[in-house]
Length: 260
Picture (spheres, rainbow, N blue to C red):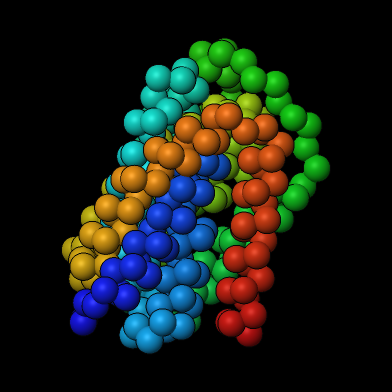
């Protein structure tokens, strides 16, 4: 793959914007970066990435973006260790299975899986819900069986598309498990980091990763994700949820328009 100055600028910009948003609203960033990698490079005369290449690049880059976000949140007291252990273990196993199996799937099928995940997340974010008041992380109670089951299913789907699953974890934590917003944002980043370990390993082993664009986006993510996390800490939680809902809905519409 030819690497030009335009190639570096475009890939860095995609990585920066996606990772800033990921740190701000507590997702791995693939909800933005997956379609950006598919559709933006050809607009600048850069060879289009395949769905397999996009999922591979996303998986590796998100590993670093989520780590940077978690480090930015670690001192805020919003990381719930029980949620991270239970859901992180389940999503890691699921992401291993999904990432290894994705090699046998067609390009269209990978995009369809992404479209389904994005559509589900969009619907969940627009479901009316009572705001759960922020409270100390150690006081949080949740249904462990439900949390583990949902995390495993998300892991399989996110492993296929290299997305780490943060864009589904956030609405599930908010709507189904009734976790306060700021704890949801910080904890989901930690869980998606664990998920991305499984996804990235599976994509690398099965030869689905283009390392040059992945490295460019990693550098961008290490700069942008902590900035997004700091910005997110200062924003109203309703605004954060609104931003995430609009991003997910827009992406779901675009992906399904292209699939159909």
